[in-house]
Amino acid sequence: MKSGFVVVCAAVSLLSGCALHHGLDQASLQEYQKQCDQLGFKSGTDAYSNCLLKQQEMDNDNTQRQMDRFIWQTPNQQRKGG
Image (spheres, rainbow, N blue to C red):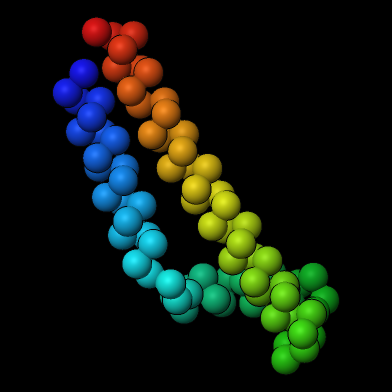
């Protein structure tokens, strides 16, 4: 039971760290730009900006889903073993 609590605390700490970083890192921005360029959006347009925002939103959603899976699956696996 104690180890499950530690895992949840660790996950919350990781999420807190993610929440502190609001800006895009250069690698993410370049990847988003590449995706929008490949989709045919023209740099400097509103549509291009919206594409970049949508890329970031999808990336954030994927990260959240991964963290949710980690938080909810890990304690269940420990209960089966214990």
